[in-house]
Amino acid sequence: MKSQLIKNAQMVNEGKTQRADVRITNQFIECIAANITPSINDDVFDAKGAYLLPGMIDDQVHFREPGLTHKGSILTESRAAVAGGITSYMEMPNVTPSTTNKAALEEKYAIAKQHSYANYSFYLGATEHNLDDIKALDPKRVCGVKVFMGASTGNLLVENPQALEGIFRECPVLIVTHCEDGKIIGKNNQRYEQQGIVPSITDHPKIRDAQACYASSSYAVSLAKKYNAQLHVLHITTEKELSLFTKGDIANKSITAEACVHHLYFCEQDYEALGNLIKCNPAIKAKTDRDALINAVKNNQIDIIATDHAPHTWQEKQTDYVNAPAGLPLVEHALLSLLEHVKHNRLSIEQVVEKTAHKPALRFKVDKRGFIKEGYYADLVLISTQQTTKVSHDACRYLCGWTPFNGVGFSSKIVSTWVNGERLYDGKTVTKPSKPAMPLIFNR
Image (cartoon, rainbow, N blue to C red; front, side, top):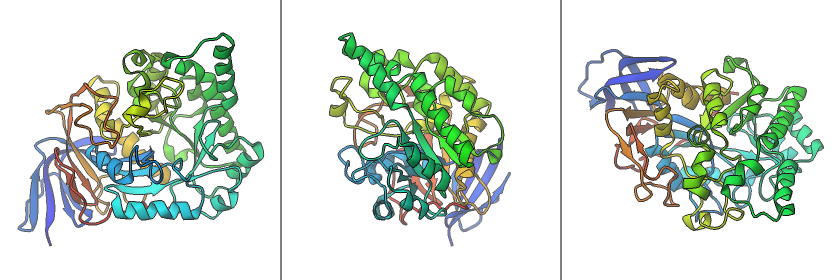
């Protein structure tokens, strides 16, 4: 039986960086040691001192299938994710039709089984009328229930207090929320209308402002406390919201928070150059907010870093601000953007691994992933800080064909990604897996 032996890696795992060799047999990490002597059965891979990380577990992506496949698909976006060192993802319900019942969930799982390059799970979307579907979920199979509190499309907006209370009272899995108050956003828009002003992209963080975010986030937190629910608040963007979350060990928390890579990288000063390409909800806000988020990642008020990868076509983004869709593609360069924070001493590489792999695995109780441990699945990414990455629209792997990082030179390079023990990315080419990627299992 052939095995793979990764030699001379700087392994980053559980708060430490140390030289290590790692042997992979079949799908699993068989052995970790300072020096493993190659056997006749080993295919030896020399890491040459590059950083070996557990693959990122991205708890928030929009891969656009079914129904919106002109923007992206499970195949195209998961392939880009693997090139970005993301080995598992949890995908959102706002597709067409919305993923709000068991049949829609099963359709997604069937598509992923056939086409996904990375391991996967899917959220059920909450509506004001599908509490029975929520209560019937299998906690070991479904990552969570997504609740859009005040901002969404189609039938996924949940504002009715009785519906929200039912969800927080009865939900058998983790509740994740998009928190922006629609009434406050509406009033902010009305002010522009009353003054006869057509807003532009620089007004986006003023319309979807800190108060809109805080009002909704604080409501979600109050409901979670009232019903002792498990709550994870997605994509925090404001310093004001941080007061809602505590520091400390994620194992002791029932309420957690997430930041996204673009809110940690960009700020409102970037709207002038990038325009609608960085229009997203919640909005990218002030530099002071961005700096507060980075600090909250360091002090464990923010527990997880994700992408909220949400591609739209180039043509869709070229329209006027009001009509341009919100969202941007991120999975291919998310880890590289985080390593820029490491380079500039804003975060440590151990903190990046903690927030992108360890903490998602712990919060969602993912089985045998998120750590480099013997007996765990070999979901690994090798990153060289001796090589660089020049990003361009032409070179990105997204179906939409563009990236908000166009022209950026990152100071590191992803040189390999293993998913379930199979090296799918070699720094240049993403290879289709010989065996299907796997659905995530949750130890709940």
